[in-house]
Amino acid sequence: MAAKGNTYETTGEYIQHHLTNLVCGKTDAHGWTCDPHYADQMGFWSFHVDSLGWSIFLGAIFIGLFRVGVSRLSNEAPSGLQNFVEMCVEFVNENVQSMFTSAKNPLIGPMALTVLVWVFLMNLMDLIPVDYLPSAAKAVGIEYFKVVPTTDPNITLGMALAVFILIIFYSIKIKGAKGFFAELAFHPFGKYLMPVNLILEGVNLLAKPLSLGLRLFGNLYAGEMIFILIALLLVFNSISLGLLGVGLHLLWALFHILILGLQAFIFMVLTIVYLAMAHETEDH
Amino acid sequence: MEQSLLFVAASIIIGLGAVGAAIGVGVLGGKFLEGAARQPELIPLLRTQLFVVLGLVDAVPMIGVGLGLYIMFAV
Image 1 (cartoon, rainbow over the protein chains, first blue to last red):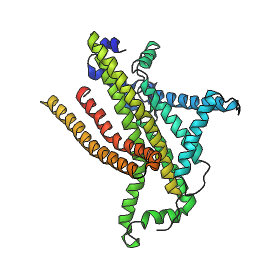
Image 2 (cartoon, rainbow over the protein chains, first blue to last red; image 1 turned 45 degrees about the horizontal axis):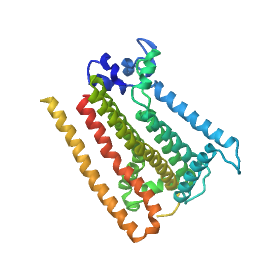
Image 3 (tube, each protein chain N blue to C red; image 1 turned 90 degrees about the vertical axis):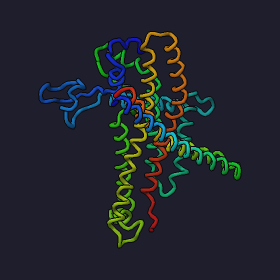
Image 4 (cartoon, rainbow over the protein chains, first blue to last red; image 1 turned 120 degrees about the vertical axis):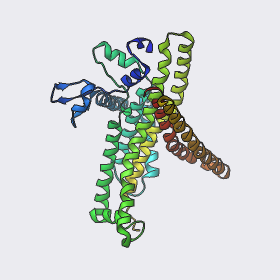
């Protein structure tokens, strides 16, 4: 795995290399380029091509898998894939029905299913040994390649931003702009302390997407970091250290499966809870 | 000197994160067992909630471990 590490000067360089995205963008000096060394010159329109590519590819896998799963429905002899799809849908359905009780909204169920399966698939890329896909990419001439989309804060914060926009949209749609403002301005202390209320509720509102995105990113980033550090044990060309590395990889991967599923589940639960709160109309 | 300061910083990050998470998980697990002993028929419901809160508690120290190891080996 990391036995080809002799091309790196130091361990720090090895880690840095594994944590660098393939950034593409337009620079003034070099035109369109995919060299991460010029990332600071690209400005706003710089694209993390590897994260985008993997997340879109995994989304396509999710849609394709579920599409095939329900294309040949059968009551007598359901196939394994059909059972799996039914299990996922039932699990999400149960969760949505127990948490989203304030109003009816046909968008919540499909969105929760998408969030759960898509985030789980993106997290699952973490279990592929850290050097396999980057070395394969290097063989076809791509120098930097980061495989796990959820270790890129742009992806997780982007998803959290979409949830945030939905929260604001439904708050205004259900309660009206006035009702939404009233909720922010008059809630904890009554109308005579409006500035204090606005600050408290404003922070509360902004903390939702930030914590949602950063929690997923932080967990996956830390997990990936530990995988990379364990992979460093295999650089030294010593059999005992190599065996230790393989053992540690196995242990951490087993523990990490729990975190991967749990974080995808938590992302889904919090999305549902936040949107349920946006639909509540009770007067305070 | 600077290198050793990095190690001290990393150990503080990991250690204090572990203390906080240990207290949190201890309280959480204790309350879960209490609730389960009082009303065993609620165990499936409680277990789901337990895992959600466990994930929330677990997140911060795990991020701390990742950052600490990054400081120790990559900086």
